[in-house]
Image (cartoon, rainbow, N blue to C red; front, side, top):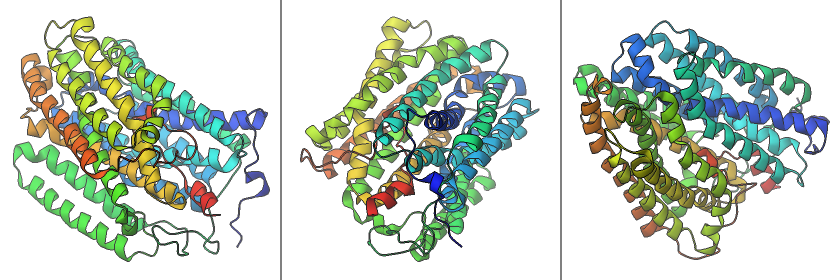
Length: 511
């Protein structure tokens, strides 16, 4: 059976053509709903807790259930698209995400909401790698960088507006609309994708592909056992950290199970003929170092954004809309400046921006300690967010450039996928672990003084994680300027996470 792309799937679309514009619109809307699912919810958490009478653990799971399935299955989602058709899997992801969003909006209790959020993450894992892979597989090489740039820019606007829209909806029709908001664009995207987006697949098992770190020939498949074990290890670790404050036996059993599942995952990856995370790729010292830095950086920033949005509402007294709007300066700085900051890694070498950037971010986190009762936005909150945003501008794009320069071009898709999953997993663990580490009780979000005390303990921990990342960068990365090559397309610093580069790009480089 021939799995090669149909003639219409050849990389021939032009941005100036009607079909090219429709294809770009579909991918922007698709990735946009996933970003909304990540950014729109935090401002609604206090209201969700009040409506359901839920404790802090339930609010953590409202965030973590989505992040868990998204992080655990995102590599599998990319492989499914390569195997069965990127448009097909993309459309399945859209419908899946819309149905899950409806379930979230109609949830009668926290258990249903958490389960629906997990289903949302599955849809996101199908959508996220597919949106960029479709652009790379469909557009003419001359138009591809501009198409990726437009996808990046419009997606960045969606990410920036997420907290603001969430706050407006919470203060208006109610928190349920933060989930229902995603249904319409997702469903509108389906007929556009079916009618205008060309289908494409990856290389068939008979076609030549380059396997990680070896240059040998292999097959393009998907590692189902690895995906299941990886997601299970993350799920059990998250449960153990979230429930550990109660000291029950279930938390201990979950912790042991997480270690066992993690060990099983590593064993499967070593023995699999087509692993989702080939151990050989970690032979690159720089690739390993960048992923350690990623874990530190995104754990710290994930905890910061989760807790700061709550701090502004619970302690400072902002409405949900005001809290969402207050976070905009940080994201706007990222949106405006990140596309230029990748050149720092080439002019200065990666060590400088990846040492300075995390330290500046950490300083911004410590400055938010002034955001207590009666704090002034202009004097206490805004300066901290501007410093935080400046640090992220300095570090995020160079982190992506350094990552993709640390491996052979044929493995760019694999490397960015692993790094993307690491970033999401780090944020997941941070949201689960920080309340435990700072002694935040189940009802802390209902008491301003109690939450403020916990926030005061958490920010130094988040800043400390950034400092560890800076130390790793300073101690392991090369200072040589010009050593890094630019990534395929455009650096997506606005995402606050590394971009995904599809296997299609890897095959193109190999050819």
